[in-house]
Length: 232
Image (cartoon, rainbow, N blue to C red; front, side, top):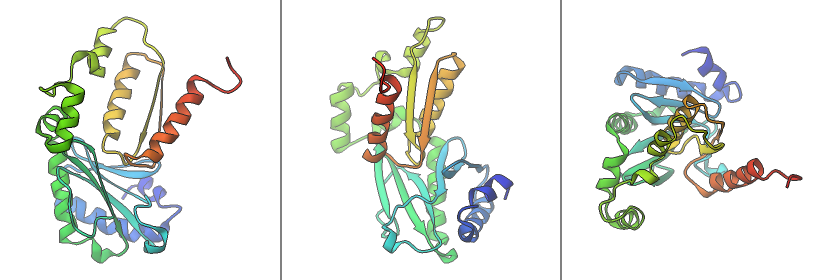
C-alpha cells in the first residue's frame, strides 16, 4: 500500500483495515490491477475503470456502519442482491453498483466474484457494442436519438468533430462529471484529447454518480463559468 493510498484515509483511519483487506484480495486474485488514489475515491482499473473505493453515502446515515467503505463496481447487468445499496444504468447495458462494506467478513467470495466480473467486463467494453446491444426501453430511446440503425453520426461524435477542427481555433470547454459515474473515464479521455489539441478546457469533478444532484451543480457551475455575475 503506497503513501497516496494511506493519505486518502487520513480523515477516516478507522476504515483503513477494511480497505486493506479488500486490496489484499484484489491483488491476490486479479492480474494487472492498477490502483489510483484520487481526491474523493481510489480508482481501480485494468484497460479501463472497473471499480472504486470511496466514502460515498450510498446508504442512509442511520443505517451505515461505522467505519465503512463504499465499493463501486460496473457490470453489464443489474445485480439483484440485497447487498447492493444503489444501482443505476448510466449507459445502455452498463450498470453501476454501490455496496457499503462495514466488516472484513463482507469482503467475501461473493463480493470478489462480482469484482472479477466487473474487471472482465471493463477490459472488453466498447461504447458502440453497448449501444448496439441495448434492448427494451433503452433501445427505443436510442433509436429515437440516433435513428433505427443506432449509429453515432459524425456530426454527433465529439472526436470526429475535434478531428475536423484540426489546425482551427477551438472554443472554450467546460466539462464536469461525478467521479463515481460510469462515464467518468470517458470524460477524462475527452478532456485529455482537448488538452492535446491546445484547447482552453476546465474540467471539474467531484464525488458523485450519474444523478441529478451532480447535474444540477454542473448547470450552476457552467452558468457561472460562461455568464459570471456582474458581467454583461
